[in-house]
Amino acid sequence: MSIKLYDKVTLYGKKRDITKYNDDTHTWDIIGEQYDYYVADANDKNQNATGNRWATTRRKAGRDERGYRIYEDVPPTNVYTTENKDFKLAINMSAGGSSQGGKLSFWMCKITKTLEDGTVIEGNIGINQEELKDLLKESTFVNGVCQEPVAFYRISGNVGICTMTGEKYKQALKDRAEDETLKKAKKTTKWELGRVYKTKTMSSIWIGDVIHPTKGKVHTLVDSYYADKPLEYICKNAYFNYVDKFPSRIATDKVIDVSDFDKFFDKAREEDLKGQMDNGTFYYYHMEDEFCHVNDLDKDVVETFLLYAITNAMNRWDNRSEMFYKVEDVCNYFGLDYDELYQEAFYNRDTMKYKAKKER
Image (cartoon, rainbow, N blue to C red; front, side, top):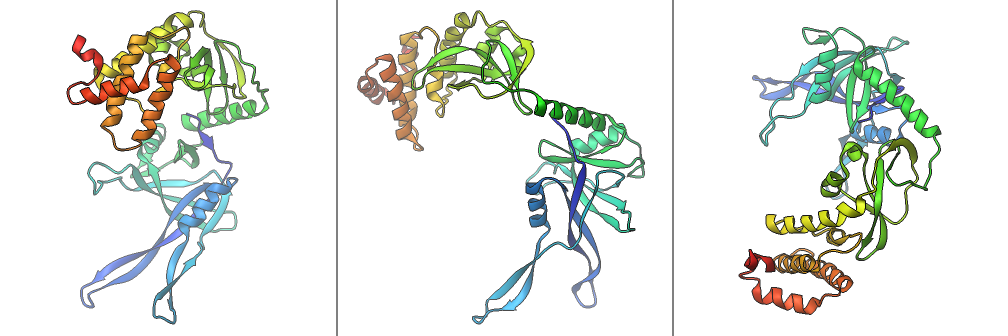
């Protein structure tokens, strides 16, 4: 996963009162205040909008003429933009337990930084425990305080903290350099069979063309994760993305042998259909994709599965009409009588999971 190291960060502070119960007055007295911070990339408009919204609070603003309470939004007052470096960090509170059971995933940490004008930023942020674990591995902590200055990064939607000399920081710099290279690289929509094509976030291989029951001839793409796997394994296990046009991506030097695609694909599709029936599973949302083929599929397998699909549709309440339309489209493509299959499934649905069960 790519690590994005911020150049500058904007911190949006939300004030939280520190209270203590007064036994004499039986009230909660305010004895201090502290700030929680949202960390945003200073150059990202969406993150800054989210941070501003997160730190905005509401307060009572009197009542209207009908006596209803009026509230007004109070924008955040503690907002700082600074270079992403030289923050100090201390662990304040562990993730603790959830009211729903299990453990929470964020630890509360205190960050501190003194700006050039003498302003001191001090407050709490939540750090995902996986990212905090990496920081603990590559830095020195004394009494919960990190001894090295830290910087912020983002990975998979989570904010993390790393030292300026640690492995996470080095990886982030490497990812940044790779991103710059990708931005300058030439993209193409003319793909070669077996070659890996990539963008910053995606990487795919064109392994062959197939016939889709409702879309016609389409290109079959798989994730480049499978680049080191045998083709037979890919045909049996990969998730296929069927496209009629190649997306614009960057060609890499990695090429795999897909010359036996025709040999393995149809066989894998038939085994998958049989496996779904044996296991009692049913992939409704992309059902037409299950019948993609290079040469042809065994009609007995197709007919058996369609009976199984119709039976499943009869037992469902959500989107059942759409399911029947999907089955009918596949029947029309393979030249099967939909009405006949429907009647057979209807009369046997109480005792028959699918046609082949009687034969086993």
